[in-house]
Image (tube, rainbow, N blue to C red; front, side, top):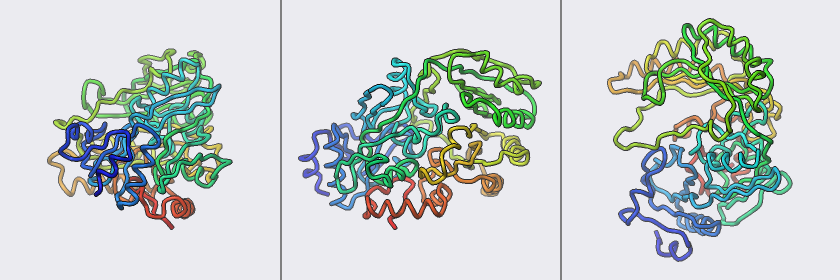
Length: 440
């Protein structure tokens, strides 16, 4: 590789293996990478130069925003680190966000202006990965996905050109970027339409006893609940002091009306074994989680399971999810309510197409030392039966780095349409370190 030629074209730092700073540069939030080269871009021009170089050299490109993606662990290729591109500008309700920004910074800046964008759960998650993959967040029932709040982007293409993309300019590419992942270029700026958000009512309910009546009541309650309310259900084993074992419901209500939030949750609060731990008014940035960074000395175990988007969370599938958790002591069960504004969007309006889903469900057992092949296969079979009840996989919640998950993420019609967009904007598949869509 002609690395010196790249150094001449980039104002930011180009770091190769064994050079000073290499170990720090290849360490990202979710792991340790082994790329062939890392560019810490100082500007959009640096990104464009790095992409042109990679295309000419035949080197695959991986883009790092918040660094939560498992794709950083795939060896080889050029990693473009957007960590310096973090500007946040507010113009009325239009918000322009640098491609390397994280949601904690965005939420904090918007909160000062009384605004918000639905942005996932975790402060350190990157704006780019979450949005390009769809972006299920705390306001999904009121405002839809993060991608639904997107009005335009600045994109560096595989040819190294910088283009402005919106519904009025390159509409098919704009369609693909909302759910099609990082297949089409490097987004160096995201433009969102924000919403008024003075505060939220946020809190946690603890649960005791059989999960099944709680899950059914939660489902029934959300069917008619105001769109201001979004909830999650989680049941986790004892892992560390910050994640105590047990089942909980976490609720987020847009606004500061605690009584309205309680009223919306009334049928669930009336159940035996449900107790309110905390339900009060908070600034939106305060509810975003702070996830610990990767610790090389304590790597997380593997995960046997997956996620699915449920159109109908009927009693049978809720029972199956509860049984999965019970039959696998070292396992996690997680559900989030959808519907509302999420479902208002037609399936073909964005690349994130399963808009009939009313719940997102994830379940998995930890692949601990001593787990046998037979035990692993039994868990995989149990999950496969549950996944078959859903209508697609949410790519942002999978750590798979093989191509098998892509077929589960998109319908055949969406896949064909994405492949045509890919052929136009990245025919050489320069951007392949992602849930990859091959050019048609």
